[in-house]
Amino acid sequence: MKIQFITDAQGKKKAAIIPFDEWERTEKAKDILEHVYLAGIIEERKGSKSKLDLDDLLNAKGFSRADLES
Image 1 (spheres, helix red, strand yellow):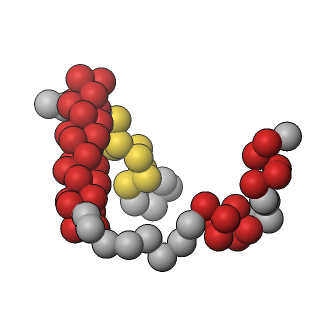
Image 2 (tube, rainbow, N blue to C red):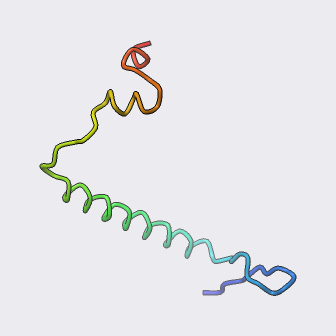
């Protein structure tokens, strides 16, 4: 795999150019890891009671249930 770097005037690396298929592979791996991470959080929280309900979340953002209905 050939990687090219873009540098500033002092030679400090600022960006990398990688082949598109490598970027796609990396994105897929990132998505899988994100799903594994979220599955772990879900498993960890199974059976626990939520500390916030819908009204708390809406109020925190300045909304109410009535705002959802309109």
